[in-house]
Length: 236
Image (cartoon, rainbow, N blue to C red; front, side):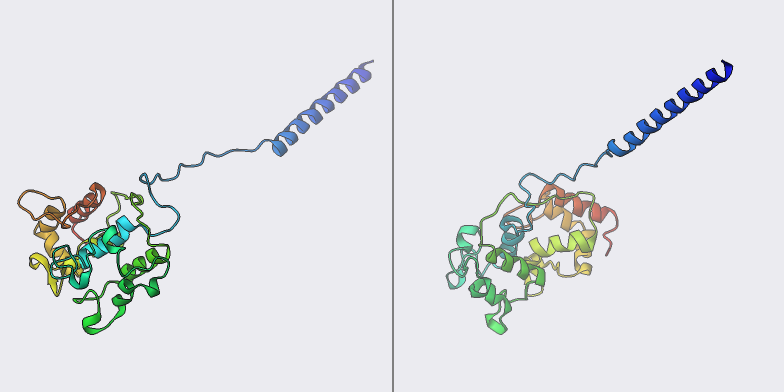
């Protein structure tokens, strides 16, 4: 009888172990551990996330700062009949939507001598590429598509230099020194950063000439410039 009871206890123990093992095995097979996924960085409303070129933020500033200037293609000069200060005026002549190589306003960027535009110095490769892609994508009036601007990102090479090249250098380079201010190199930009004129102008502070002419940088862009200056205006 005692042996029988021991055998029964042993059998029940075996059943319990098997059942528990089965439960553990089933749990391992069917229960999936779901880890929390960090949220994606939220872009500003209207951000173009498909890789296309935005006219308002990437193309218009190039035309305004490099072409729509005094004695060239602003509303008062309208040299050769071109006014390049707005989408409506830019699209009127010299642009063949979908065909950059067939568009006069793109081809003149590669001319030599007096036929080259702008006449006082070529656009950067990145600026030419922006215009080319914009035209090939249909030369659309895309607006409100400034992608996410990180106020904590303010290195010179990745943020400050491209920003100034796109929105300032057209009026502030050798051959086109508006206000006798040159922003075409790091050393020249740092000079204006150190004397306070760069931040004062882009912030539209009292006593400074508001820049860019006819518009204003976003609050985030101004913050980036301010933080870059506060950090020593480094060539980083």
